[in-house]
Length: 395
Ligand SMILES: Cc1ncc(COP(=O)(O)O)c(C=O)c1O
Image (cartoon, rainbow, N blue to C red; front, top):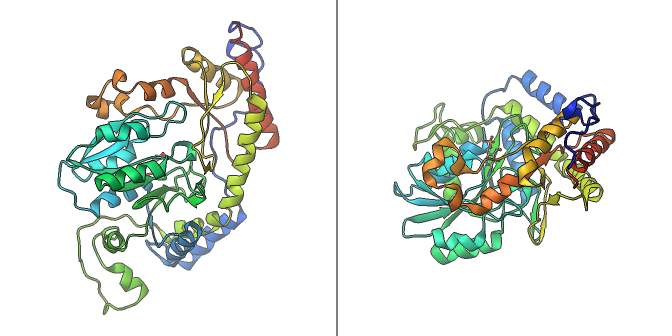
């Protein structure tokens, strides 16, 4: 091992990249800017406007799903997914231990309890073999996550859900455009929830969507996301006579029309943006293959991921040194997520020994930059930096 080498930027050597190469960047072009400007000029800037509804229609066609509700985040879409069900307080929802807090918040905000299940150490998705051991008579739902845009094993999850009559809320925050056995994510569960946060493959700055084929859920969500009012029919079909009614409990989960317009132009290029990500992933894989100490994440059988994140698994004892050394070379790398039980708010739900595979995955995981606007030169600089840094770890 030669981590003291003077040519490494972490030891004062010349960095490979003069400018920091960021880990994620939204892809926004002239069409996006124009759509936003035109919508602002139209003066319809408030929530659930015509552009939002057009975005919903186009997204439902793109996904092949009946109902799409554009919301102000994936977190609120997850909240709505449980609000629409009225499960008895204290019912349990199964959540993978390696996920973002929002997956758990959907259930928690609705007075439900979560039960954490360990994940596959090769890709961070819920370990389907462990789900049944977490089911008891209070269990009402499973909330799988597609970490990095690589889908959870939905066939197995749906089989278990059917056997125990459980509701499946698929947290597809990261997987817009991903295919699982020929089907798009968003069509694989009772309800799916996308994120359009600034870091995601398709972005409206902040934003999300609840999508479902279930009419009963859609009939409640349509009111609940608009403060429990029937304002949608007031906006669309003019059936109300100058006022709208308060028909259910709810909150404000609608999005500005300005962001709806951005959703439309972003959706037009999502397949192209995902293809660009795939090219980068393939380039990294071909260049970094065979390097001692680097493993790639396992792709789910039958999946074509959208490459939201490019992760590598490195030797745990050197992970933070590798991350710091890459940053010194000008390549931003980070760790995401921290297993839920490792966070203050969830620490009562278990210890490291209870989730050995989450810990194994987390201990080795590093993310590298991946986004359509990453230039050819930047892609090469990332590869050169990883090679330079990993070389110092050779025995
Ligand atoms: C798996 C998962 N669920 C939910 C969210 C929350 O998304 P949003 O920021 O749109 O609420 C994220 C955000 O990164 C996520 O990764």
